[in-house]
Length: 80
Image (tube, rainbow, N blue to C red; front, side):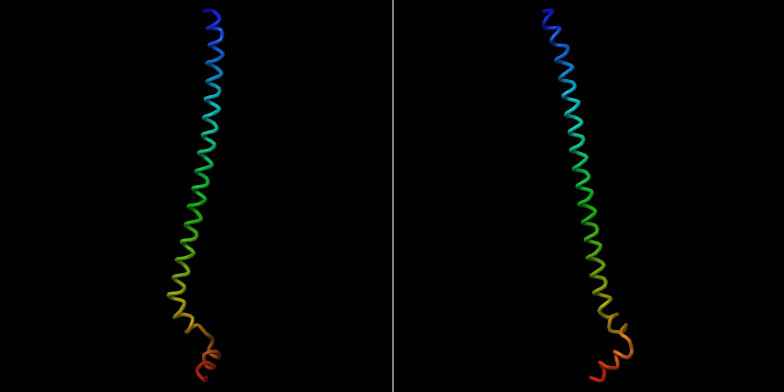
């Protein structure tokens, strides 16, 4: 019995260390996944914002472009 107790204590300590190491690795993996998810969300927001700005420019800019041409250029197009 004495040998079993002397082997059991280091075994329990070793298992505890392996468990803690596994938890650290799991925490690192979870942090990496969260970072990747945050980067993906940021990219999606940026893409959505760019698309919305483009749609707004197309909707407003299409009419605004015609009136924003210089007068000389408008005269040329009217002469043609």
